[in-house]
Structure formats: structure tokens, C-alpha cells
Length: 395
Image (cartoon, rainbow, N blue to C red; front, side, top):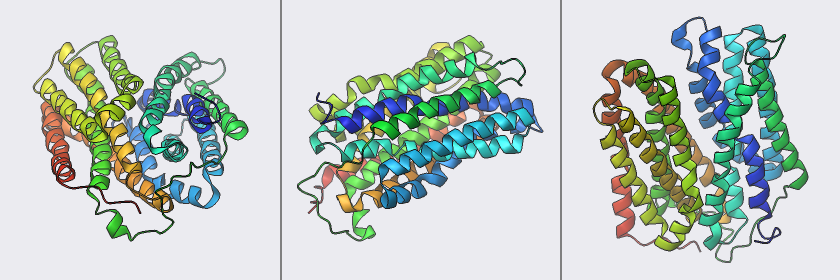
């Protein structure tokens, strides 16, 4: 691999290793900090839900900004916002202000919307046939962030003279500063010239009637919403309702995170070998298995199996959907299509996350599985429709 040919991929992968630590740090500490400073324990997990809402809120503005000022300035602006939000979160904890902490969480969510644009920048920088492998490589940064983020949060959680967890968010700011410097020094705005692209922009109705585009958006949106629903519900159901130990619960969540990202070592090659539609079908099958494993009141191995199949299924659906998305628009249409895609994907993720607590409280773990199944089955019409039609030519 020559650096010049894959500069964007390599630079953004390193930047994402540090930038993506924001999400696991907030997921780990959001509820803990909330429980300490919220006016009621019932509000403890609100910062995490607000973070996910912040992602959905910023997807369209982030894409619009980059269409006007370029990817580099957009990425730098988003990362600068995240550094400010991390410091603001530390200040909120120091002041014991739950309101300020929720605002900081929302701004961190805004940053993650910018971070999600990394995958489109990579897709724009390489030939079409290289997109699956390159996106798969980029997703490996999630493994580093998943290990690095919680470690930073833990090591800096107690600093003499400061309230607990102020140091964790100062550590987050340091990680984001490293990401900012990588982008500032090494990232360049580049686009690979693709021969079959036209400068003409088609009407939105024509673009979004394409069966392949419908399947691309549905795959990522359904994959994210089902994953978020089950993952958010698992710690509360497993530890608080079924009385598994915190150690066992942590082991299940760690296994899930690894299952989300480790398949990226080979999922890009599988797309090139088997085709993106077969990978989406495999992701659908894996998530269906996940739901049936989790049915009822599971023991430890059932929780573990549910979350592992959930993670691998998410990887196939998200990577497959993103790859198919890049095959469904012209260069002149990319910012509009990417913005709508991410708004739908992360809007549904927010809905899944917010629904988890309500479903658990009202109908329990089995209710979560009951709700997840019809949500997953929304993919079936898109899969069959795409199988019966030929893709619309780009030119």
C-alpha cells in the first residue's frame, strides 16, 4: 500500500483512533456522572440519550458545512467543537451542574456527526472497487478507540483537588486534541476522479426512488436502531433485573464492542468476493439469530451470544449499507444523499436508544426482543425489491 494512494484512509484512520474515544468515554461515564449530579436518579441516563440526539441533529448541518468549506475545514471545526465540549463537560462536573453536562453531551453528539463523515471522505478518495476494503480498514479504528477511551476515563477519573471524573473529560479533550493535530498537519482535501460520474444533479425524488439507495439507507438505519435498542437495554436488564455480576455484564458489553469492529479485518474482502447485497443479507440473518437467542429470560451465555451476533450483524449491515450508498449517487449529489442517510440512520438510533428503558420498564427483556423483530423485518421488502431490479445507471 503506497501512502500517496491511500493518504486519506491512513490519516483519517489515525485521527479516528483518538477522536472516536469521545463516544465510549461518554457511554461509560454519562450515567455514572448523571447519577451523581442529576436532580433525580431517574434522569441519570439522559446525557447519553441527549448525545445520540445531538448526532441526529447535526448530520445535515455537518454535511452542508463541508459542501461549502471542504472536508478539512469541516473536520477541524467539528473536532474543535468537541474539544470545547469536553472542557465544558469537565466544568459542568466541577460546578455539579446537570444542565450544563447535558449541553456538553449534546455538543459531543454534534461532533460525532462530523466524525461519521470520515467514511464518506475515504470513499471519495479511492476507486469504487477499493471502497469496501478501505471502509473496513477505517472501521478498525473503533477497536483502538473502544480500548483507549475507557482506559483514559478510568486512569484520570480521580485527580487530587478535583471532583471525580473531571479528569476523565480533560483526558477526552487531550485525545481530541491529538486527532485535531493529525487532521491539521496531515489531512488534505482530495477526491478520486471517477469516470462514470456526471456533474448533473438529479431531482431528489429520482435519487431516492432507487431500490439500491433504499436498501443502503434501510440496512444502516435498521442495523443501527436494532443494535442501539438491544445494547442500551442489556446492562440494565442483565445487571439490575437478572442480577448478573457487574464483571459478567462488562464482559458481555466488551465482547459486543469487539464483535462490532473485529469483523472489519475481513468484511471488506467478503464484500469484494461475495457482493455487497449478500453481505447485507448475511447481516440480516445474523441479527435475526441474535433476537431468537435473546428470547425469554436469558442466562449469561444467552446474553453473550445475543450481543456477539448483534455486533457482527451490525458490522455487515452498516458496512454493506455504506458501501452500497456510495454506489447510488453521483459526485455532485454526494453531500445531499450523505446528509439524508445519516439523519435517518442516527435519528432511528436515537429512537432505539430512547425506547430501550421504556420497553424494559413496561414489558421486560422479552419486550425488547419483540419490538426489535418487526423493526428488523422492515429490511425484507428492500432486500427483495433490490433483488428483482437492476441498478439505475449513474450517467
